[in-house]
Amino acid sequence: MSLGYAEKLSYIEDVGKVGMAEYFDSPYILQEKVGFLYLILEKSKHLVVFTGAGISTSCGIPDFRGPKGIWTLQREGQALPEASLPFHRAMPSLTHIALVELEKAGILKFLISQNVDGLHLWSGIPREKLAELHGNSFMEACPSCGVEYLRDFELETIGLKETSRRCSDAKCGAKLKDTVLDWEDALPSKEMDPAEKHCRMADVVLCLGASLQITPACNLPLKSLRGGGKIVIVNLQKTPKDKKASLVIHGCVDKVIAGVMDSLNLQIPPFVRIDLFHVILTQALSIDKKYVNWTLQVASVHGHRAPLPFIKSVEVSFLDKHDYKAAILHMQPLWLKRRTMRTRSFELLLKLNFSNGCGCQSAEINIPVDFKVSTDCFNSEKDAILKKLRDTAIRDLCCGLNAVIERKATLTLKSEVTVYAIVTNIVQYNKTSKGSADSVSNSDVKRRKESVNGTGTSKKWSQGRKRKFRY
Image: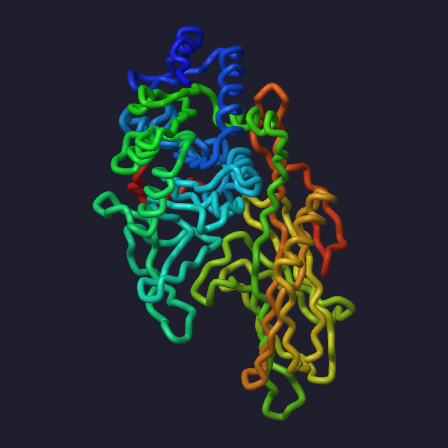
């Protein structure tokens, strides 16, 4: 299906030098093309989607070749744009969530991405149906046993280098490595092999927000042509593969995908970001056994060497114990050492102050302390609790909701480790029946004190080091 005639009816907005122009189809032509795309996807038996940096610009992450892209600004000697939120707090776009719904509906069979922002995994795409060709800034892997670890913080290295953590498998323990490729690194066969396989099987390869200029990744969609497949390209700039495509749409990816989802009668649900953290309470009796020396720590679930990026500080107070001095923990590791009477139990109130990019400013958690280390371990149905948290957050539009998903005690060390899950962001997506969508924004969050299990109230992009990403 060729729509070459439609290109003549579109209007062009030149917003940069030659090669950096953005092309916008007229509203009428855009609507026509979205209709054609809907028909293509409705008939598709094996849809593969190929994504580039253009699907993440609405998340606050700059692209590379656009008028305000990183490479464009560097070439022109201009300063790089400041991100509106930390890289690790970028939320999935409407397109990210729509792709998840297409996969759940059985329409999307496989997803290939050049992006390293991790948003496909955060949005809910199954790992086995995703090839991250250039790696993931939040993923480290064990080179020995192959286990992957998705983190809530941006890794400190790129170029497949060793990080400061080890594999958690007791039988392995090898040093982990980051997964982001540098320029000299070849594309990993673990990602390329399934990508090539599915492109050969595809009857449609839908390219979203990709410039299709970096080899060998840009040639993957062409493999579908040998089996009679079609290529569809949605991008604001022209690409070298446009002539091979059955349909080229010059429009914002979110608007195009919103229109297609509307035609398919598929909803785009809100995205709920849930983060995990540890609360560790360790105790030891004084020599005279009259006092307890105890330590409270709020820590990452990813190990003692891992940062806790979404918590800025913790305010610790003692309910009904006015003679106990409150404290503010603002330096990581977040820990507090105290000495109290052995016979006196009390209740701690932790006020977690969130970092920039979270949907609410703070949340509160009550922790009863009686210095009796229980031998009972609590390990709940994690998926069920996370689903309940997510459903409640969507129903009440409330950040700060939290729940205990695991508790374990160690008698020899007299410590208790509790794993909490907490809602830190809610993002609602708006789409219209005319194939357009509003930009992604966090919903208005109501503060409230009751939670599922506890109480809740409701820098720049990677400038710490220069990155060389393969887009």
